[in-house]
Length: 170
Image 1 (cartoon, rainbow, N blue to C red):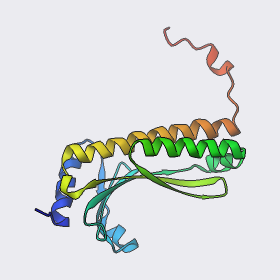
Image 2: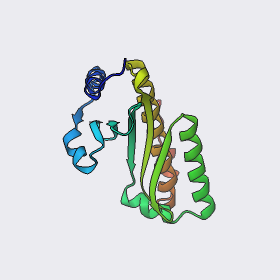
Image 3: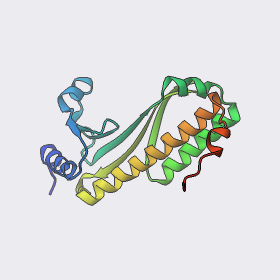
Image 4: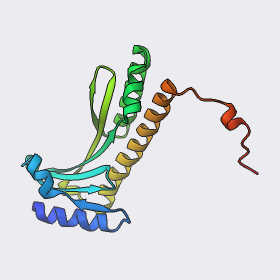
């Protein structure tokens, strides 16, 4: 039996409510930007769950990473080889998780990365939704960590003396 968009929205909202995360129904706001959006939730500022009218077969989950101005500037300082390695590592990690991505950049200056996954409507249940949700969140967190560690190195050299005197067992 095919579920109507409103039924799917109610199911997803019920699943979201089982978490302790804050969420917002941004359907009306989002429909002004794209009338194909049937409904949309934003969870904890980074994750969106969306039902689009032109995709009757799936619900889309997106994780958006915005680069800080410092990281945008630092990405310009990477050599072409470092840049290529960075993008290939990111690409490989995301695709191994069964997800897709897009990024907005000009030359080597990345502004945003959007990591995406989906759940087929016919297979929508709480475990399947959370499986994709967890994959996107963990991938986004991993990529964010890689971005920070890679690009922070380019504009702030690490000082070993900052940590060499710290003993975590004191």
